[in-house]
Length: 228
Image 1 (spheres, rainbow, N blue to C red):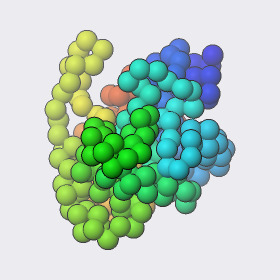
Image 2 (tube, rainbow, N blue to C red):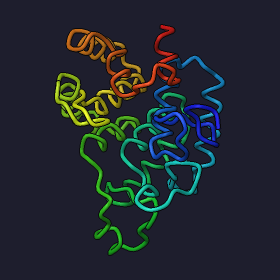
Image 3 (cartoon, helix red, strand yellow):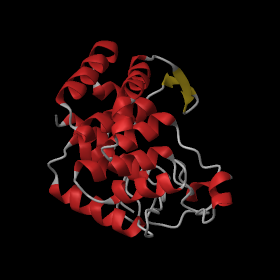
Image 4 (tube, rainbow, N blue to C red):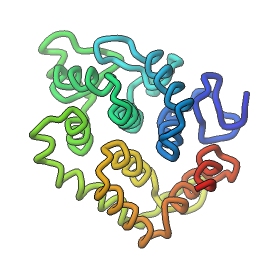
């Protein structure tokens, strides 16, 4: 297996890990570091086709993961929305319709069929994510609620909160990296410039954030980032 890639060609966090839950997210982050890469775009489009089980239901990895990992996480869902919306695909549209059908929840494993199933569906979505997903689908109410999403992203990018990673305190970066792909997917220049400015002034730039999360210098996302 190629270092930092699983058997499907998706990027992993660790050098020899297979079937990582967040591989799709890491690969989408790689795409947004260089969105002109047509080869990466074609590859990710094919991956989404494999993950598509029809009627807005997607797996979060082309492999059929087991246990809790088979349920779609909000990180992976955001990655799918960002890539699909930016490239004018259909995934974000069909998933949104299914979310609405599930009363703004998303269960990709035990898909609710009846009204009772929908009511007792526990796969809740965070309001922040609903707003972003709705904006990607041009929902007027979600546009009106954008200030809430903006504030949440700002707090995440401003925060210097630390978590224990690899046995030592480290800057919490997962929310910041999601902001990185969200604002680039939306493509609003003022929004990109604003968060680039915040990260630059607060931490010294996106390189610091990426290198905090991906600890290996030869990780594909760090290698690509160092080219800019």
